[in-house]
Image (cartoon, rainbow, N blue to C red; front, side, top):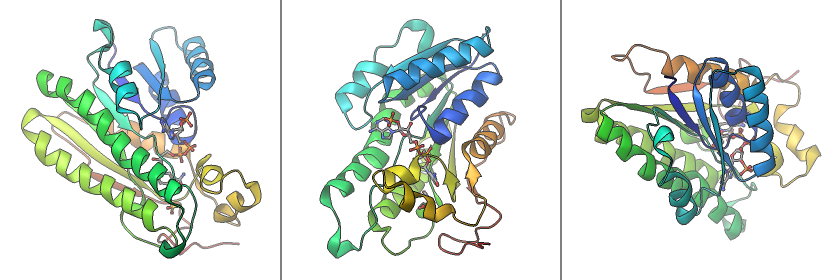
Length: 253
Ligand code: NDP
Ligand code: 8X3
């Protein structure tokens, strides 16, 4: 029987690439995100490429506890034993000084990156505890290790993810559950389009004159983390493009 992986935010970027990577490696997948058509398209592609796996697309908003419970709280018996949870859904919205911040942007980031991750974990982790095994991978960020000008609330949410990864590991260690924090630097996905609210020109700026990571690069690391023997866990990975030394220091052409 294949292992089951649940990936939040599989409609784009890191989550999309991770879904492809796990499908190539014969995992059954629960893929989530708000954009239903993208999930259906991805399901079709994954099943066309691998006839030995199952794919369950679930379209919902991680910010809504009722939607999370409705979609994940009553899974069919053959989808209930989730082995791996990739808490990936997340976003940055806007960049501004604290005195000039847009409250709605702040709420979207806090509700998605912190509360959404917590809702998913609260619904999925009891099954792992019951079975005495499982692996939770939280997608943090360099923004969870450092802070930078105008990044205030996004950085705070990713510092929260970092803290939650560490505390989840403590709470779950006695149940044999692994917790890994994956903290990327610049990755070229739809992240910047979302941060700059669709302004394509501004969205290109962070990647100008340098080679960023791709979603596939992060997917490779995630797959490596879950492929290790039972007694080995990668607690924390800080993964950056070679051209990036810190949140703000990037070597550009
Ligand atoms: P993308 O914008 O390409 O993907 C984000 C994914 O999150 C989409 O699938 C989106 O799906 C999903 N998502 C966002 N909000 C919600 C929501 N409310 N409910 C359900 N799903 C949601 O960005 P990335 O792939 O880059 O981002 C993935 C993670 O990686 C995020 O947590 C981000 O903070 C983190 N990260 C990204 C870095 C980068 O440079 N790109 C660097 C470090 C960390 P949909 O819109 O369909 O709901
Ligand atoms: C995304 C990386 O540096 O844009 O988490 O905050 S950064």
